[in-house]
Length: 197
Image (cartoon, rainbow, N blue to C red; front, side):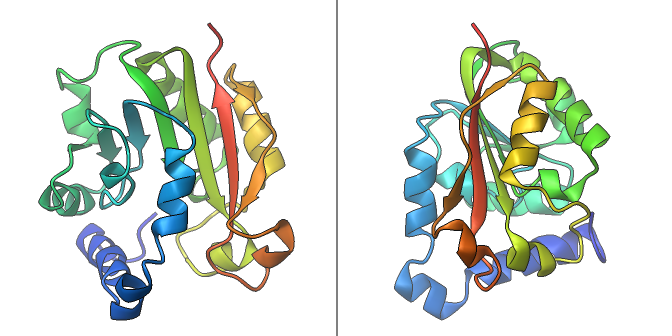
């Protein structure tokens, strides 16, 4: 998943967010709004990276990531983040203890069998009736990162959801309509799915 070292990858992600014009224009505001309106509650952020989404999620939310350097950056931001190994032995790892789960810019980094396995590993920690929110890049965003391995559409996310027993709602394109996916690097496929009661 990482093109060089885990530390380099984490620092590149952090540097992208610290560009002065991105801060001045508050370019993350629409994405934070989109995340908040999913009403995920206390969320397990799988593949949390450097913790940007954890800053928006409800209190008590927890991030998990395979990249120890990204987890370190997330902790520096003041959020709760664990490596996969830490999660495996954490007291926070309680069955059905999370209201929501977030997989933002994660699924496109793996093949479909790996995505099914990942979801099956983490879904036991989501309460019945809990919500899972998926976010994947569209064409331009997908092409912008050499660590991406599988272009994943909203329809693909719906199929993945059903494969693990979730009930998907219709996917949508954000922040612009679907036609913007070719020219705009930050257009995304978004899908909310529900764990049956």
